[in-house]
Image (cartoon, rainbow, N blue to C red):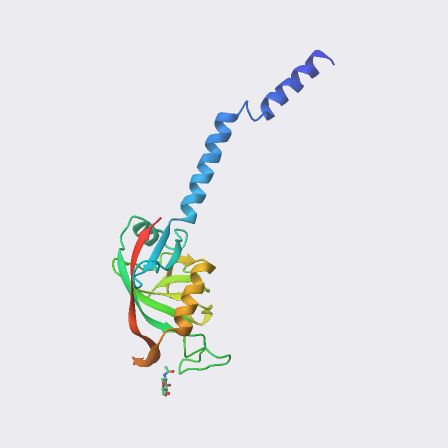
Length: 203
Ligand SMILES: *[C@@H]1O[C@H](CO)[C@@H](O)[C@H](O)[C@H]1NC(C)=O
């Protein structure tokens, strides 16, 4: 191999060798992991008080800083400690139409209040899908949707997302726990006969 050609090959091998550029490669990768971890967010765990040992059922909500940066950061910092669920709405029959045009009632959600939850949408909120946890007004009330709610547009600040394991518990509450009808404003709702208190923790 001519000398100039050999020098070029060596230079290319050095340039492409991971070890030769390891310092830069690692720091860039760390930066990426750090960014994606933050975007993925911490988990807000709502543990139902239950009735003693062995009954610590929980709903795990993955905080979504990409949807609601300030809210998600405050919650990740431990802003909320306790709350309770008070409204449980089953899935509406296909074609159910209320005075707003439907779907519903019932309204396919679990609603509660979380002490310390304060905030509104920043930027464009997502269309509510199953598993999304969203603030009502500016808090402390919020809901977890059991079905998509495209009919609500982008009115609610969604701040977290429940996994399917947690949604099995949410489904159980909305479909099987005892409720009674009430009318709030013009809306016909179903309210839990007994509030479900929970503690909130971050992991
Ligand atoms: C609530 O229920 C009443 C009685 O069934 C009904 O007339 C009214 O339209 C309902 N309200 C809404 C907003 O659907």
